Amino acid sequence: MSSTPQRYLLPCTLLIFSCFLLHGGRVAAAGKVPAIIVFGDSSVDTGNNNFIPTIARSNFWPYGRDYANGLPTGRFSNGRLATDFISEAFGLPPSIPAYLDTNCTIDQLATGVSFASAATGLDNATAGVLSVITLGQQLAYFKEYTDRLKVAKGEAAAKEIIGEALYIWSIGTNDFIENYYNLPERRMQYTVGEYEAYLLGIAEAAIRRVHALGGRKMDFTGLTPMGCLPAERIGNRDDPGECNEQYNAVARTFNTKLQELVAKLNSQLPGLQLVFADTYQLLAAVVNRPADYGFENAVQGCCGTGLFEAGYFCSFSTSMLCGNANKYVFFDAIHPTEKMYKLLADTVINATLHVFM
Image 1 (cartoon, rainbow, N blue to C red):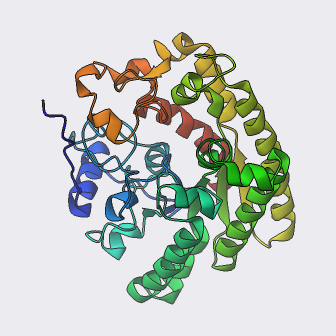
Image 2: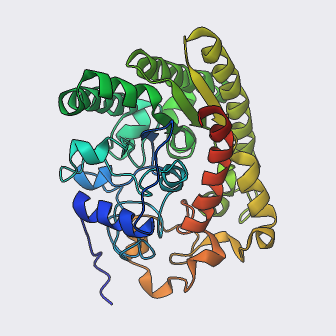
């Protein structure tokens, strides 16, 4: 097989048809959540980076090999992401389209949309590393989306969609592994505790902005044990091959502060229902006891050596691709497999269902 990556820009019409097949041909009633609206990074980017000039892409094989039609969509996994499973759990289409896919109509985006961009962070400097979409630009796209909804659906219907939608935030890991611990500028400006406070200030402003535009039901997903990503294991100079416990400690302190922010905003913003989803404990348990969750390998990714490959490097290593991604926690050296994303989705669903249904 040629090492040249095969690129596919999956049309929204085909994407929605694939979602229909995944859902067994039936779309359940949406209930109290008419749409899933997503902000974040590669953990929830369903293809926006396909449409911008960046190398932070995954719209080529082997990504998407286990998706409904076996084609890559721009998701950094072998199949669906956690947000896709969350959408399905709320009775909505089981695949969330990317906002920048111009093939998507506003009617298709009305039940779910992702503004996320792989390799971005809360910090604009993080997005600048690989020239991806900043969180501020994601919020600008969201404002544009609300205006489009009003034109297409009418003021009242648009207000209901915006007010009853579930907003999912999944962002922050890249600020540490791609920016703070990888480049000198932020380390010269901030201690790690000060940088956490800086990032949480940006998160707070973003949540307040969406609230001002009508959003009320929100989940902010905490950081996972980022020191146990295969790429961070191999880069662990103090203990090569083992989890970077310094990074994991930062994730835990960030999550503690994030939970404090959640409590603060719930008390200050009228009508806000913001929940914190703790995915750290789940992924840590899976990494420590993979067999308990049906996995065989939690140390390497399915792609290539599984130690450093992600993005285009995966497309150059297809001869070393694993046979069954379901045996692996990670698909590449950074991103989970579809099976792991399903487990992470269950954590978010459990954190939100009792609040929002």
